[in-house]
Structure formats: C-alpha cells, structure tokens
Amino acid sequence: ARLLKVAAAQVGAVHRWTDRADTLRRLISLLEDAAGRGAQLVLFPELTLTTFFPRYLIADEKELASFFEYGEDVTRSANAGKLFQRADELRIDICVGYAERTPDGHSYNTCVYFSANEHTVIMKYRKSHLPGTKEPYKEPGAINQLEKRYFEEGQEGFSAFRVPGMLNGTMKKSSNSDGDISAVGKGDPIVGILICNDRRWSEAWRVYGLQGAELILCGYNTTAWAPHLHGKHNQSREQSKADAYFYHKLVMQSNSYTNSCFSVCAARCGLDDNEFPLIGGSCIVGPNGRIIAEAQTEEDEVIFAEIDLTGCRPGKETTFNFGKHRRTELYRMLVDE
Ligand code: CDT
Image 1: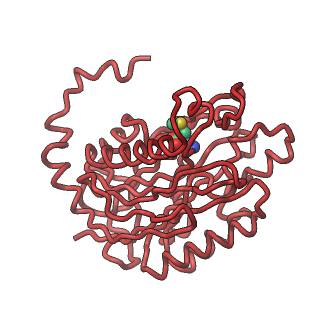
Image 2 (image 1 turned 90 degrees about the vertical axis):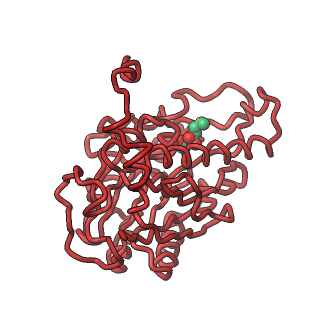
Image 3 (image 1 turned 90 degrees about the horizontal axis):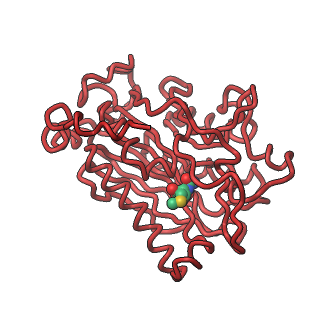
C-alpha cells in the first residue's frame, strides 16, 4: 500500500472588508484541525487569503494592490507567512492559492505547494484558463468575473511533480524526488495542481495524466448563481446553484476517472459581502470517479481521507493505459490553433 492522509480546508465567507489577520487565524485553525486528524497534506482554496476580488471593478489602485502578495517568497509574506510556519512546525505539506504580483510587476492567480519535508515551496503553478472578461458586464445586477483584467495567463503549463517524504505516514527521506516520473506507481506520489476553471478543461487533466499523476489538487471559487445568466436562461437561483454543484462534481469525478487518479478540491465558499454566493462541495475523489469525502457545509470545514495510491494502478494499467490505447494520430485537432 502507498497510503497518504489528505485533507481539504474549505474556507467560508471572506468579505471585502475582512481583516487579513482574521483570515490568517482561520486558516491556521483549519490547518490545526486537519493536523488533529493526522493529515499529511492540506489543500487550501484558490485565492485563499482574501475575498474573491475579481468580482469587483476596483478603480482604487491601492485597494487592488492590497489583494496581492509581493516578493519572491510567499512563505515569508506578512499575510501568509504564519500559515507556512505552522505547517512546517506540524510537519504537514500545504498547497495554497493566492494572488501573486512579481517583482517586475506581473500578476498571476497562483498556487504553491510547500513541502514540510523540504521546508520550502517545491512547485509554483499559475492558473492557465482564466475565466471571465477584461471589461465589466453590462447587464444590471451581473456578478463580474474580471480575472482576465487582473491576471495574466500562466505560461508554464502543467508540470507534475513528486512530493517527497510522505508515504506510509512518516516523514522520511524521499524514495524518489529527483523529478523522474517514469516509474509510475512507485516512489513518491506524483501530484499536479489545477486552479478552479482549469478543472473544466480535460486537456489539462490529460497532460497531468500523461505524466502519471496520481493526485490532482484544485482550489476554487465558483459562483452559485450569476444574475446576468440567471435572467437570460430564466432559471431560479436554486436551479443555478444546483447546476453549479453538478458541473463542479461532474468534472472532478469524470476527469479523476479518465486519468485514474485521486483528486482533492477545496472551495472558498459562502456568502461573501453578505451578497455574493459561492458553492461549497470540497471533496476527495478516487480514481474510479467516486466521491470518498465531501464537505457538508458552506463554511470553514476540513474534509479528510486516507487514500491508497495503489488504487490508481488498475485504471492506468487497463482502460486508461495511455501507452496501449491512445490514438494520438486522430487527436491532431486538439493542438491546432
Ligand atoms: N474562479 C474561477 O475560475 N471561477 C470559474 C468561473 C467560470 S464560469 C463557469 C469556475 O470555473 O468556477
């Protein structure tokens, strides 16, 4: 068995006016809760540290700047440093989303993987599929999605990576952390990161699948209903919300199945600013596509499972044995401009 204790820290409402120190305290409390259950890895949501600010057209540069983290090393930032320190003390790996502003002024929707074994960030992923628009919607009452305004698209693509020192419950010297991912099913877990809208793109999952990924981590902020769509499609809020949950789970479950990997996803959810609804639905999914653990609330909540990565093997060796069964010559259109 290749056992791993994984958790998702679902984070409830964070308002535009919420004090950053309060949010940080909540995140640390979720981490400690997960630690109490024995978690070795805790996933936090997309843009964990603040409210989902791309819903606002922010004219004030100073306010916009306040939603970003600066500097080369987020593990030392004033708004997040204590979370990484606590993870290091507890010997737990964490994966955390945040708004990144680089020293040369580029902005990304970013997620880092911090290894407690290595005491450092071992992977930085920048969101590839930015949803929304550059300009605000014109329909009255619409909830904006201005990620294309505030962020640049990540250019690095989808690099799976080994996480050292995790297997069978003890921190120990890595059995394979040299970046070699050829020996799928052996050595350290092979992990990939997606951010929110990325999860709706099966191409992204497949690129990870082709690298033998055994565990996909995905934080998200997904609107439960959007008044502008809701008007157009004549749907009730309840129906829109049910749809948002349905499509979220559909893509997590189907892509876990077709790539024979586990996945963990963590929501920022609840009613931000007492006005903007985000779905919960944080869950842990198995390589057969079935949900193993699932959040019950739309508030701060930890979900947890012990997973056995050998469960990825049947799928990877049979139905989704890519080497044997893929028909790449028929898929050319996938990479045409
Ligand atoms: N944050 C984010 O990426 N939200 C998107 C909205 C896309 S509209 C379907 C999401 O995938 O939930």
